[in-house]
Amino acid sequence: MSEMFELSLTLLGSDARLDRTKLLGQPVAVTIPTQNALSSRYFNGKITRVAVSAVELSSIRYAAYQLTVEPDLWPMKRDRNLRIFQGQTVPQIINTLLSEYQVNVEDKLNGSYRLWDYCVQYQESSFAFISRLMELEGIAYHFRHEAGKHTMVLTDSATRHQPVSGYETIPYHQTASGGITTEEGIGQWALEDSVTPGIYSLDDYDFRKPNAWLLQARQNPASPSPGSIDVYDWPGRFVDHGHGEFYARIRQERWQVEHQQIHATATAIGITPGA
Image 1 (tube, rainbow, N blue to C red):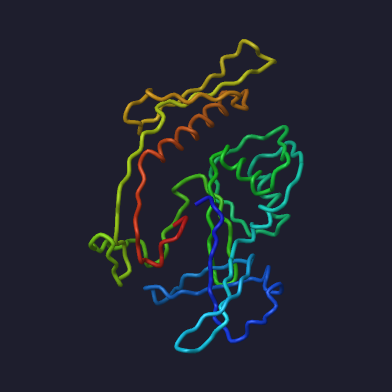
Image 2: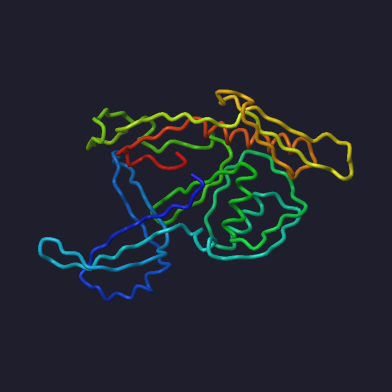
């Protein structure tokens, strides 16, 4: 979630003299059958790196091409720019930049977002810029892969995620430590609890209303000792109480999520980010 995917593929061939530069930027699609006979798992992206080596299998020598496959978003990690956006919301800014790089995007946002009078991309990549804005506004993203394309899906609520057909329920197969199972399911499951801050506070100053009280604070209900660790931010980049409450809630939810996590290993092909 909220990270670029990176696939590492190894392809075997008889010709080691293919022009590797012609492979760069080419689309790649991988199809994997699932336990649902009516559907398959797809991986789709663009080749961003190519390496070739030699391997020997059953006394036969092959050329092994190692391909790195990344999303259409990847060029945005390599640019750098200085731009000003005025009178736009963060989703509008994000969609503007994604459209310039011809990234397929689906907006599944539920929230109402503030208009920024002035927003600057300053000596940073377009990816770093939109990542910073999405983190600020509590927007997550994942990629949905299909046979011929992949789509970046923007979300701001867990209710916007849907299960993969055939994987609404995934069985748990208890195995010995380090063991594996050939059946599709979950093999290892571990719960982890961490100490997280108890209170998040942020504040700002409105020169037009110098006596205005803008401080916003939010308690983390998941913290084992609420209030024992304080996090304070200034400036909060707001002069409206509603915006301050929104940002305080988003930051508090971040700490709440980090309080308890699950680590698991699985052989279920249908497990995918965003589902």
